[in-house]
Each structure stands twice: as C-alpha cells, then as structure tokens.
Length: 64
Image (cartoon, rainbow, N blue to C red; front, top):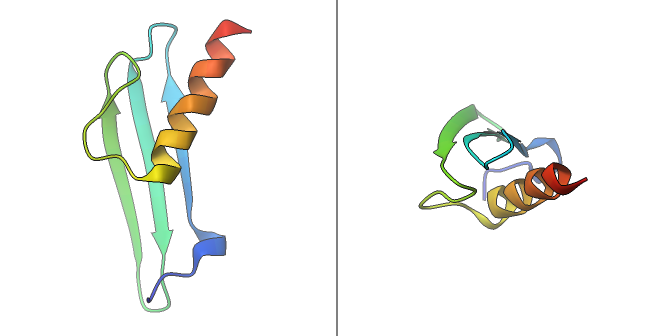
C-alpha cells in the first residue's frame, strides 16, 4: 500500500556458477528499505517475483 513501485528495484550479481547476491531497494512514501539476499547455485529461499526475475536475467548473462 505504501510502496511507490516505479522507484523500487531488484538486481542480481552472480558469478559463473550462480553464486552471488540480490540487492533490492523498496521505496515507499515514508521510508526506503534496502535488502540483500545471498544466492547459491542460482537459488535462494523466500524470493519475491521481481527477485526471481533478476536472478533469471543474471543467469542468462552467464550463457552468452
């Protein structure tokens, strides 16, 4: 309800085996939250749909 979605983002930074971190910034009207989650072999527990999408994009970059 309080989130301003156009200013929020998720970015995954992974190595060639899919290990790394997801950085998510959630901007609201009254506060901003910054969250970091570890990723192992392209997987992590409790990811939002946006975070899963960021991991998918990062993994596709490995194959190119």
